[in-house]
Length: 286
Length: 289
Figure 1 (tube, helix red, strand yellow):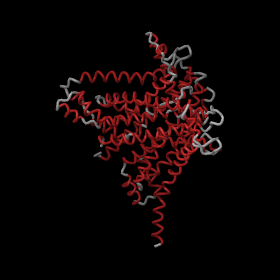
Figure 2: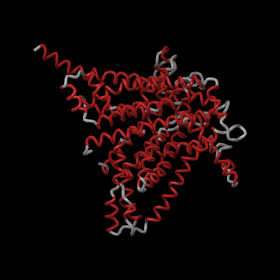
Figure 3: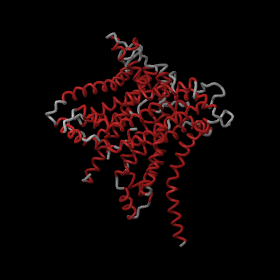
Figure 4: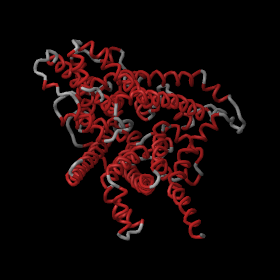
């Protein structure tokens, strides 16, 4: 749901908030700081302690001593590599499908059918309203047998699950550039539609597409509900099944997948930031 | 003439063609499955129209599942909702821009968090031999000795806060920006105490946004499946877990369509939630440009 709120909103909010420091006479000040410390302490422990516990559990053996055994044992566990590569394949297929479907659609709507944006807003919010558990119920009933026999049915449904994040990301990216001028310039220079899309629009959408891609990958790598009910051993399903056998190894895999995803996200966000900073410098006034 | 007509035709056809892939994909991937769930909820095993499924779902263990789900969603919208507002306010009024950015990014990640990773992290910290349990046991405050059970309804509620609080922070932060510093200064210049400022200005302005955020949290808590399922091994009685049980074949013969009826019920609850959210947001947007 992160991308529902555009980045710009944060910046605006940050700029407008009251500067408590600038009011030296306020007697309230110490009290505010006091409750703030409590809030930060509680929130910090609630959010960081489980992370610490998960990491510590991953680096422990059964006797409770520090050990790398769980990490080292991961690759040789039965079913791990199948599950890992299945999840990667699903992530790749989902990402490609989502981009091929959404980049032209979102671009076209921005350029030619601005009135359709409200329709797109509505349709792409639906996967948040319809819970995955209900959606997979209908999908497993409606899908033809040959499709149900393939793991890529999951990819097809993950495209739907990714729509809210991907569309909002692309929508924000498209709103940030002067699409019309770019396209008109390209067209008047004799560029065809396809080459305009590839050489003019896509490079300008790179940051938005990158963040949409990462969100999609994170979604596919972490999705449990649909995969488990469709009976495919993707990475999360495998972790859950394997936890009955060795909880340390299962937790280690889970924490590693988490850290991997977060690193990827951080990377994208920092790329995104440097990109938008450059854009701002170039346009000057913004 | 011919050419003009042709161009007019092309103009009408081209948008339709451009929108077709998206329209077809979402209709097949989202529309048909949802319609299938709704229509099967009203059909017997033999395919005849019936209200029997809904009747079954409205009583006994399925009714308890719905009640539990609604209670769980209510608890995990109110408590994390309030905590989220405090956290967002504490962050928003802090001096550190880095902290604000960090929390904004972390909230984005954690709001979508859940399932197996979350389950393991909490078992490792609050399971019967978890880190925090051991620490607390050392000072003779082992929560398990005082009736706490991570693998129960309240355990699930406690774990849900991990994604519900960040969701609230995300939703409420823009609304806190609508609280102009000048209002507070004006109130103070007119002699209002801090309490009075909050009672007459702050809370009335924020209330629609807070309610809207809580409705979103309600939806998210009501629909969640993976965390509750993995944490309790499917033993807690919640509507989504019951759908999972039906799909896994744990159902009395002749009641296979019960799953669709539960799904239909969930869709009804979530639709009402989203309609209310739409109404509340309209009010909330008055204070946000």
